[in-house]
Image 1 (cartoon, rainbow, N blue to C red):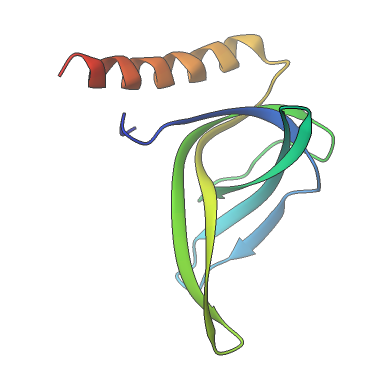
Image 2 (image 1 turned 45 degrees about the vertical axis):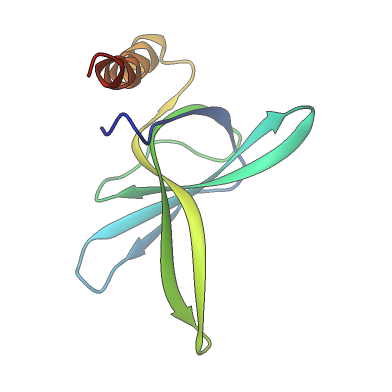
Length: 115
């Protein structure tokens, strides 16, 4: 994990995850996570590459990863999407797993501060 681009996100899965097959044969699972920021609901797109995600609509989750902006063509027009590329997506009720994910983020950020 790059300490200069770290995401730690907690929210609720707002729709069922969607798994797509890429032309390369890899898969990407897209998950929408809704968080509360200053009393307003904010939807955050999360992408998980190459593995399944054991969460569903309504689950409270913790996500770690990094922010990425990708560009693609749709309908003859170049578009972009900013999303979180997840390294971990775990149910918030799985306390030990959540703690390990958070420790990984803190270690990455701590490493950057010691340079």
